[in-house]
Amino acid sequence: MNSTDQTSGDQSYQELAIKLEALESRVANLEQAGYSANLDNPEVDNDFAGLNFKLKGAGESDLESSIGEYGLAWLGNIVLFFGISFFVQYLQQRELIYMAILLGFLSVGCIFFLAYYFRSSNPFISKVFNLNGYLLLYYVTMRLHFFTDNPIITTKSTGLVLLFLETAVFFYFSIKNLNRLLIGTSVILVAVTAVLSDSTHVMLSAVTLLSMVSLILLYRIGWIRILFLSIGLVYLTYLVWMFGNPLMGNKMGLVSDHQSGYVYFFIVAAIFSLVALLPKNENLYKGNSIIGAIVFNGTGFTFVCSLFILSFFKNDFILLTGSIAVYCLIYSIILQIRSAWKITAALYALFGFVTLSVTFYGIYGFPRAYFLLAIQSLLVVSMAIWFRSRFIVIMNSLLFILLLIIYLATAEQGNLMNISFSIV
Image (cartoon, rainbow, N blue to C red; front, side):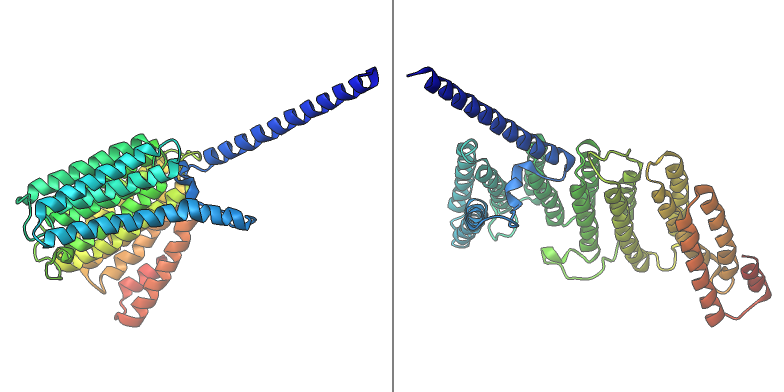
């Protein structure tokens, strides 16, 4: 080999080394960009990132690969779950109770073994197997007492204790592994177990505890979607309870005795209201999400509270609405001083004044209540100036105009009311 050939070979090796270094640098940058994107978006569940099928720009082979790897994994596990559950139910109907339960628990063990076996080679399908195992374990345990003619566990309390213990274990492993899908499933199972209890205090205590857990998860980990799910399930559970829990075979209709259930209801609403005191942390949750959670909680509270009043306190709601008004007004002042989300103070102040209006109506009735309702608008504007809230001013103006229209259209006009409206 002459010197020219040797020089040419050295240059080729150098060019190849430079290209390899450039390729490694590009791969490192892409990996870092993907990691940063996941950090910037805490709502992305890395454990189940395969659920986010990217169809735009993906080739046919990429789409087929995504469907084969993720879609069929889900479909297969769904079929597996229903197949085992139907077979267990069939054996129980044939009075092969112990065989059915034994087969159910053995199936759960096999599914958890598969999840463990695939934990390294296929993490996604391992996590799907885990979810399937949790659901199937809950179902088989539930069939020990509920929805069977010949239960192995004869006392409902024992069956409920087992179900609550299982959901507690689900919560533990879900939080330990930071798995949002499993924690969402656990939240649903708590609500289902509460409904299965068919007992006022057990049902409402369970959802009260659930509201506390969801708030803690939001504060520590920033799982805002879990909070939304919890709010919806909690108020839905209250509706199921108020209508007699028809899901457990009871006759549908409003319960005749509230059994002090409103105490749990107000505690839950107060717990969810604490969201407004959370500090700003854009890495965990967005400001719009916090405001949305507060509005969602207020909507659910208003709807269920209205049913409470119409069902149990139709002629004696003054103390109830007055207490809500005082709480909301005091809490709005606290939020104005301490909350990072200033709009929340305005929301609670407006809700407090609306419930105060209902209280005035309950005390004086129409048309005498119009005088206080008109004067109340001055107090609302005063608080709006203190809060520096244009939102309160606009909403108060609309409510005042609506009140004036109703007064002129329905009530017999009096000098005192006319003067109060004119002053305002």
